[in-house]
Amino acid sequence: MSKNIYGSLFMTLSMFGYASTDAVIKYIGLILPLSEIIFLRGIIAVFLLFLLTYIRKELVVTIKRSQIKFLILRVFGDVGCTVFFLTALINMELATATAILQCLPLALTFAAAIFLKEKVGFRRWSAILLGFIGVLIIIKPASENFNYYSLLALLAVGFIVIRDISTKRLDPSIPSTYVSFITAIAVTLTGLFFLPFQDWIVPSKEIIWGLSATAFFLIIGILFNVMCMRIGEVSFIVPFRYSIIIFAIIYGMIFYNEIPDLSMILGTVIIILTGGYTLYRERSINIKNN
Image (tube, one colour):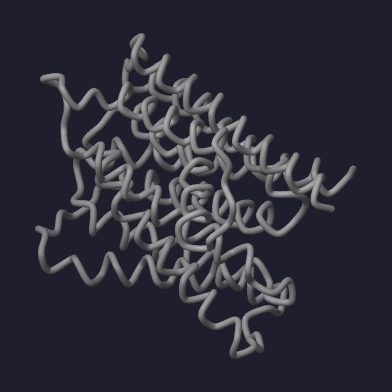
């Protein structure tokens, strides 16, 4: 198979991992405080990644000085998106929180235009504007059901932009398992930092098993996310990120009796169409320039 096919498969598996861990964490979040969830899940994830990294003999890696900043940014982005998105997730419908994250391609284009001074034409600016309208339709800021956790989900998107751009800038010589291991350690330490500010609740055996499941699915999400962003063409791979909405809707309907309403469906469709168009235009421009 071509690199693009592998990349799309890895992206889909990554989204399955993230959607699965989100579905379980949403339930555990009704019982345990967020800091405890992040910390306990992190311990399990770090242990499993340590074994994997050790077995692959990738525990000690020489990193060029020029690459350190991208690794730090990658870790910073993952920590930020974890804290803000999980906070929103526990307090929102699963599919709604997930759908908001799908404005990421639009956010990436916006960030490239503002901070990287990349040229963005009228059509892609229009797509960004329409995508933002799609987000507004989903979160319904003027309705009585609006809560500010939707804004935290949007803030998480900003951190994902930092994570993905810095991941793309990492040298291929740095193993994906090593990057995942370092990231997991940082996220776990973040949970430990906030533990004193929230009450500790002794988890039951069922919760421990649930946290173990989230750690397993998280590893799948992290590993395949790193792998997919380092293989193939980003413009071909990124649209497969939308598969997470399908997983989230299925989980929400089965486990939380969450039936998507018309505004959620409409807003999601707008985001997917505008995001897909943005990626299509970017790919067309890159082909023309080459």
